[in-house]
Amino acid sequence: MEILKLNELFEKLSSEDKKLFNNIFKMSKGTGELAIPQEMHDWIKPRFGEISTVEKQDILQVVNNITHEGALFNHLRSKRPIEAKTDENEEKTLQETKGCAFCDPLKLTPADTFGRVKGKHCITASNIAKYDGLHGLVIFDEHYPFVFEAERINDYLSTAQEWLKQAHKNYNEAVFPFIMWNCTWRAGASVIHGHMQTLLSETPYPKIEALNTNANNYFKKYNRNYWQDLFYIHNVLGLGIQPKPGINVMSYLTPVKEKELLINAQNLDSNLGATLASLLKCYYNIGVRAFNLVIMMKPFELANHSDWSELPVTIRLVDRGNLKNKTTDIGAMELYACSVIETDPFKTIESLKQYI
Ligand SMILES: [Zn+2]
Image 1: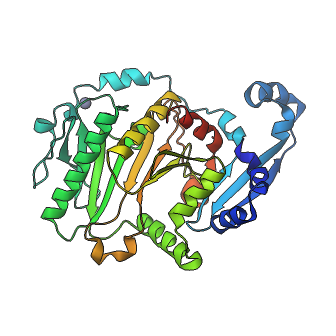
Image 2 (image 1 turned 60 degrees about the vertical axis):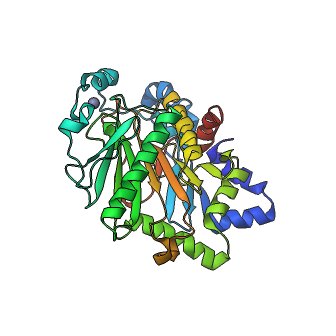
Image 3 (image 1 turned 90 degrees about the horizontal axis):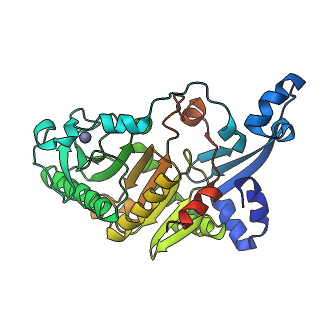
């Protein structure tokens, strides 16, 4: 199966499933046509393949009607030559930065005013230049950032949760939690040493609030749970897996960027941590060396924030591209119009199935 044949797959769905798909998504197929001078043929063939596939390019747009996310899929984008490349050896860069401040966090990183949370494989610090009032770090006890062992991932996650609890205990009015992990420089990390970040805010971050509001509006409109329907549709199309009961993994149909996975679960517990560890292992094995991972959750004191009660633990994991490319993966299209995607969500889910 390939994403450009999504319409064929859609045609095979039952009428009920088609309706459900159309409630959430719309898709449209386009063709990009161009005229190639004979002189370009020898340049094109080794890079893009057959001239005919370049002269007539299939493009599929998928839009999430509920969240207003969109993706334009064109496989040829992955074959386009990138001029600005570096021949820097990234493994060398990773090793050379060993002995950094995060390698000695007790001495070389600030603590939060409420102290540090110590895990078995990590320790928290206070971010020195904060995004927001309550902004902490979970610093891994190893420099090399590509961690995939379930025990370690679970330790980081429980330490992050304990930091959130401590932050809430000390600042009662801060209730909205957010956990994130920028892995390596292409994903926005200024420090290479493995670390997650924790935030707790008084008001929800607007993008997360929009997502929750949109999901609630879906319930009001269709009297159905958005998150359950979202997984159902992905699963029916072959883009979903349930590695453990209650953990729904989707190779998302409207990814923000390459190979994006959307994971829903009821609790941020060791089962979810173990699943995440497997997904990361898969990511590393298919060559991902830069990613963003975020965890969105219900607020503390839910009784006062009942409109958040349906939000499951929502994890998003996205590949940020090859460390050797100097060209960034995100341009004006992604910032202001619609994400342009090179990789096929069906290929991503195939890779995942080997690790889950
Ligand atoms: Zn370090």
